[in-house]
Length: 175
Image 1 (cartoon, rainbow, N blue to C red):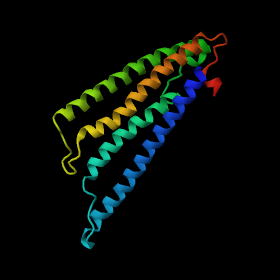
Image 2: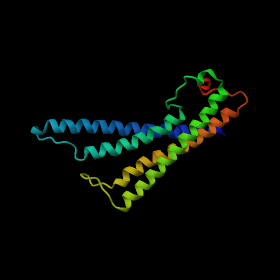
Image 3: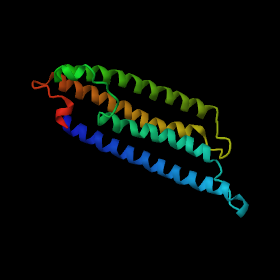
Image 4: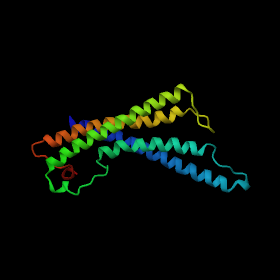
């Protein structure tokens, strides 16, 4: 069952990461067009209206879209100065603690984004130039944050399974 859940979460995390990458590519292209428009103003071109607002909202989504993939692939920074000397079971136990802490942070971030989104929606705040509702950006970022929290919960289960496994293989040996 764990393999099926891991495959499903990895697939969805991959799609989130691809969506985040596509948004970053679009932001980059839009930034090039906007800068070119500013520079060629004398030829009748103009910058993209609201380019800063679009970059801000798109980057927020992209960041939260990448986090689930990074968590599933154990891509967060680790420091192995002294843990490398210990066995795989102790390293797996440290992973359990790390994943519990990461889950707590992910849930906190998702919860605060949820409250921020409700606040922006209640006060009908909009961006200055494009006048699109700010809660849209919060909602987009929150989808990634909520999925990140779910992936973090799964990684606790994965780490516990690795810690309690009879052979207790380290995650590096599985790769």
